[in-house]
Amino acid sequence: MLKAEWESSPNDPCIRSYFVNRDKLTIAPTENGSNLLFENRLVIPEHLQKTVVELAHEGHQGIVKTNQLLRDKVWFPGINQLVEEICKKCIPCAASTPTKHHKPLQMTEIPDEPWSRVSADFCGPFPTGEYLLVVIDDHSRYPVVEVLRSTSARSVIPLFDKIFSLFGIPEELKTDNGPPFQSFEFRQFAEQLGFKHHRITPLWPKANGEAERFMRTLGKAIRTAHIESKNWKQEMFTFLRNYRATSDSTTNLSPAESLLNRKMRTKLPQMKEKKKKLIDIFSKDRQAKEKMKVYADTRNNAKESYIKEGDTVLVKTPKENKLSTPFSSKPYIVKERNGSQITAERGGKTIVRNSSHYKKIKVDPDTLKDQEEGKDELEEIQIPNTPTIIEPDKDPLPYVRNRPTRAAKQPKYLKDYVLT
Image (cartoon, rainbow, N blue to C red):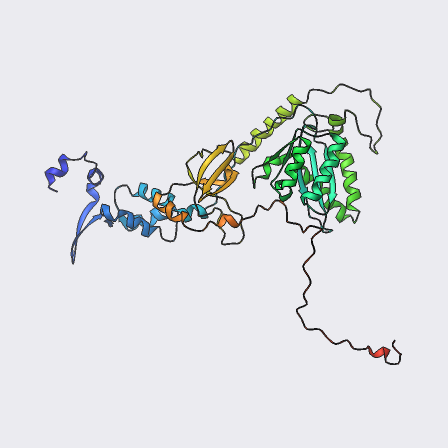
C-alpha cells in the first residue's frame, strides 16, 4: 500500500487496527523474503489467525494463559476477541471446568392446614441392615419415623398406610425419585387413597429440604447413642419425644401443639395451662424464611439462571475418580423450563435436572452434530437416591466355593478316644 493510500484510509475497518499501531509495525528481511512485525512479534495474516489460536490452545489452557502465550510470539487485530470465542466454544474445557453457581433460594409457603402436605425420605442403611422411613408434616414439622429392613414398594406401602390411618390422608406427598416411589404399586396406592404424589427434581435434594434437614438432626441423635453404647432405637424414641415437644424457633409452637393442638408431657415438670387459641403462624413463618433467603443468597452470591429453551448446555456428572470432569462433554438441547426445573434432550434421551446442574455453552453446529453421533455416558448413570434391595421372596444366589476342600483329620488329643 502506498503512503498516500495508507493515510487516506484510516477509517477502513480492514486496515484501521494496523493504522492505529503503524508506529510499532516494521518489516524484517528474511532469507525467503520479508516479514511484517509488531514490535518483535510476527503479524499473522487473516486466513491463519484461527489456526494460530487453536495451536496456542492445545493443552486446553484458559483464556488468560492462551492470550499470554500468543502475545509472546504473534499479533493480529482482534486477537483477544478470537481467543475468547474459541476458548468458550471448546467443549472439553467447558466440561472440565467446575462452576460455583448458587441459585437463589425458593421458599415454599407453609400449608394452610396441618397434615395437608407431608414430605418423606429414607435414612440409612445402618450397620444392622435397617432403614428409617421419615415422614414429616410441612405445616407443624411433626415427624413420624418407622423402622424397616427393605425399601421396596411392598415394604414401604404398608407403613404409609399405617401412618395415614393415624393422622389422616394428606393432600400431597413429596418424595425423592427412589425406586419405591417410581413403582407402579406406589402409583396405584396414591390413586387408591386419593393423594397427589409429587416427586422432586432428580439429584436435587434441596427441593425436599424439610425431610432432609430433619434427617441430619435424627442422624446425630443415633450416632450419639452409638458412642454411648446405648440402644439406638430407644434413644431415637427419646429424641422424638423431646423434639415433638420443643417449640419451633419460627412459630414459637411445638410440633405437637401445631398438629394435635395440645402440649406433650415429658419428663420435665410443667404447670397445667388453660387451652389457648393457636396464634397465626403464617406471618412468622414467612418472615423467618425471607430472612433465611436473604442471608443464604448473599452468602452464596446466588444468581438467577438465564438458560432458556433452545440453548445448548452441558450436564453436571457425579465425581467417580480424579479424572472425572464436573460436566459431561456431550451437549444437550434445552426443551422445556418449568421454574428451576429444566428438561434437556439429546439423541432421543430426556433428562430433568435443576438449573444449577447445567452449564450454558456456545458450540458450532458441526461440532454439535459430531458429538450427537457418540455414545451418551449419562445413559448408564443411576440416580443414587436409594440402594437396590433384594426382595425377601426372591431366592439368593447359591454360594460357590472357589478354593479346594481340605481333608478333615482327627485332632491328636482325641487319639485315645473311641469315636462313634
